Amino acid sequence: MTLKSWLQRLPGIRTFVESRRDLMAIRHDVAATRRQTEQALHATSAAFVEQLLASPRYADPRVLARYELRVHSQTGEDGILAEVFRRVGTTDRFFVEFGIESGVETNTTLLLRQGWSGVWVDGDSTAVASARQRFAREIAEGRLTIIEAMVTSTNAAALMASAHVPAHFDLLSLDIDRNTYHLWEALHAYHPRVTVVEYNASFGPTADWVVDLDDAAMWDGSVVFGASLAAYARHGTQRGDALVGCTLNGSNAFFVQSSLTADHFASPFTAERHWEPPRYWLHWRGGHPTASLR
Image (cartoon, rainbow, N blue to C red; front, side, top):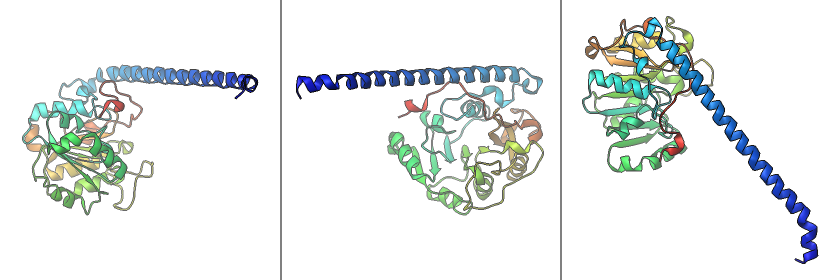
């Protein structure tokens, strides 16, 4: 290239450099705005939760929502589970969780990192591949089995059997969106000490509602999914499990075998006592950002 032709292109090069600099500045501003928004949401959520927990409904120290903490869970499940097992103790420190995606945000990832063993099940092949890569060490150590399968009410028990899950173990976590209730119902031969299920808070504390069984159907993003808390409480009673609490954002319910409850949890063990409304907007502090997980 001659000096003359290079000089002719110089204005265009200068414009390109300036445009790139402007684009980088815009990206920086967007990132800063996003951080500020997230910080504001966290601050608002923290203030709301502090005010909420100061109300008489949560005065009993046995109320599990008082112990919420997020490390690897989506909301406060990590803290609640730690408190539940502090009260009832552990036996085999074995878990099973259905619906783990890539394992970045689950109810059992923290337990796995604390030396527990267990089984994860998910039907998303891409997510399962990511989980197997992230947790290759735990798999190699024999502490984690990951099953790739689309879970239904007809194959759930067989999947458990294929992984040699014992009939009695410490923790079961269920979240497959639409058909979670029917999945729990299908696992009648298994008796975990503690069970976590996603419930549908939209139906309030008294309605006994369950989505129609359709193993081929997926959640469509509407309020038609899972079951109401009253339905889960009824089924839990039939299984010999007591409803002992829910997350403040109204997403997960916690059950403990009735023989273990003693005076450890806030009673009565009913949906009316423990239901939390759908506060899905709540944001939680603490823990590892997903990018930090190997």
